[in-house]
Image 1: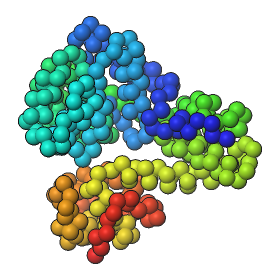
Image 2: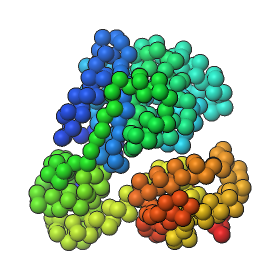
Image 3: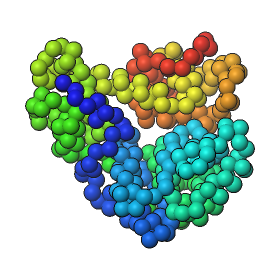
Image 4: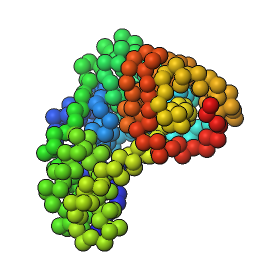
Length: 350
């Protein structure tokens, strides 16, 4: 029933639908490259799964078809400045830097290597204000950046005023799709990825309605419905397959999200998952109790309480944790305790 599984992956590049105005803003920001000049910096923000990365990739693809342009797409979550610079260099022409290359040498190499307008995408950039990567990139005259985050106000409040000023109002928000818009998006995917005629427009609308405007959730549910229909030997996707797809899709989304997160998030998640329901103060106590053993032999080191709050917020945004309350008394719980960390976390959580 599924004829092309790549259609349901995050890296599949579709024709952009219902984002024409946003695409215009982004392509206008990139347009100076066509004249040999540096592009404008852009902050792209919005909820999880609404197509921020897809829109960025589509805009760069359109630019590259007009004029081949060096670019790098870096996932920044949990990365240091040196780690981000190293990742940029690996995507640009030239030899890859060694893992042991010092930070200052990495920055010097980047400055030497970039000799023409180059666009750097800083994906999952919520933690960027905790680094000085934007200052580093600003010292490379031909580099412009597109930072992707969830919360514009929080992000801007944590960066230097000169960075805010340099954006020149190039802060672009992506909202959730309407049910009709998401139905169109799912229809376009199924036309490429499924056998003809196996799902109705009404069923697509049901999937879109449950996804509540989040494209990734709808796409995962569409794939799950097709998988269930195949497993049940249905010749077409039946309504029961659509209804049962939601739970499977949510689990797949959570597993993918957890797998994509850095080690710190896994430690915090496992503390909460194994406890079931726990207050912030108790999370911190348990984290401190196991940190020395959990981080033994790893490149990372234990993080502060402030950093833990940021990681917990990310886990909530990824639908891995639920929460209620404020401050030390705030409670967290796993949305699905059967979803466990794929890392080898053998440290017993007290």
